Length: 147
Image 1 (cartoon, rainbow, N blue to C red):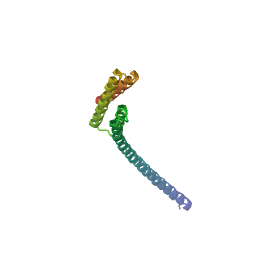
Image 2: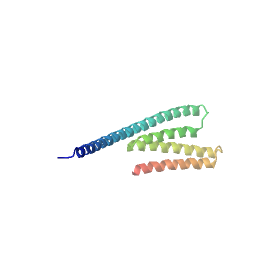
Image 3: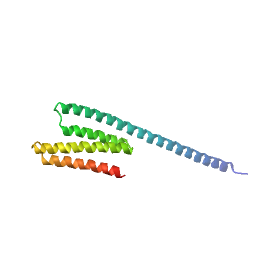
């Protein structure tokens, strides 16, 4: 005849194992839900930022056309939108299109700065900065193409 205490301790051990596995499963499900909600909230935050940056481009363009904001600020706002979109997409064709647009903007700004330098309106430092920005954009595009 088996000791009742022994049976009780076996039963309690089984219950403990069952409760631990249920607890672990529950913890894993909660962890998964937290990861999913974090992923959703990051995507939501990225979308909110993109909408804000797109609005910034509109406001900056209006300021530029009125003469209150310089061209560099307008291009910088456009580049921020491109960067935000790049963070939100993994589609290769979309990334290439965005990077191509970034190169065109950087090239336009570099050329405009060189013209202003020739007129004595900007410093050589500004010319070098925008040439470097153009090359950085071009490098990013070529890196994406080679992947």
